[in-house]
Image (cartoon, rainbow, N blue to C red; front, side, top):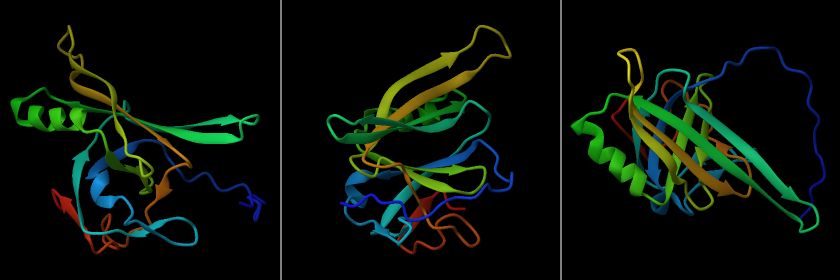
Length: 180
């Protein structure tokens, strides 16, 4: 496999902002092997799948990718880590949180505040590796669920090709629940 450079990069304008708007969860077993990529390795299609959408608010949500390389062994992988929190502890979402915690193979689509959508866990799935159900001591403290999802992949997360009007409107086989 050749790993020759094929392009440089000029300094871009300052246009991006940090933060995550929402995450969408899909079953890795449904998407495994059905992802279609374009020449830039953007996701352009996949087999029929339901993506379960969870909106996020606040600055405690983050998505990071850490590279681990060993020159002597000739190996490299990327640890994708997503930390998200939802306000409110309620019986309504208790079952869904339990399902997320127990699931071993998820693909998580992370939509950032720049409308980029990255797919976490495409290689072998992502899973919850830490979490807390919190109810702070004071009235203004956080009350809700914090979960950390981790995936170890060959490369950094692939982006979904940019959408036209609403996320995934260019992926005809994607069903979003709840819909946009």
